[in-house]
Amino acid sequence: MTIKLTKSGLKRKLAKGKCRVTFKKMDGEVRKMIATLSEDLIPEDSMPVGEGRAEVKGLIRAFDLERNGWRSFYVDRVRAFAENIK
Image (tube, rainbow, N blue to C red; front, side, top):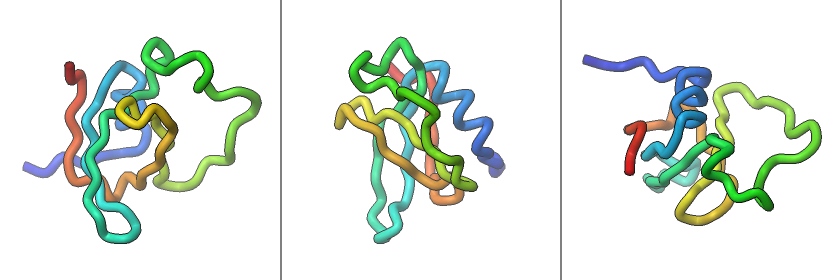
């Protein structure tokens, strides 16, 4: 069974807590990260300020909890996604 991933669906899941995202980078490398959009998990000094960036179709910006910084990935390049990880 194939699950259709949508930008809005992934963002909702990321906003709820820690998620493991596996995706293929533009250079072909496969990358795994523990990411979130939950304000409770993002350090205060890393919280977005101001208006933010313009939305790019299919691109999600999420906070990488392992690298302690913001990273981006395209929805159509996601290979695996697990929500509510410990």
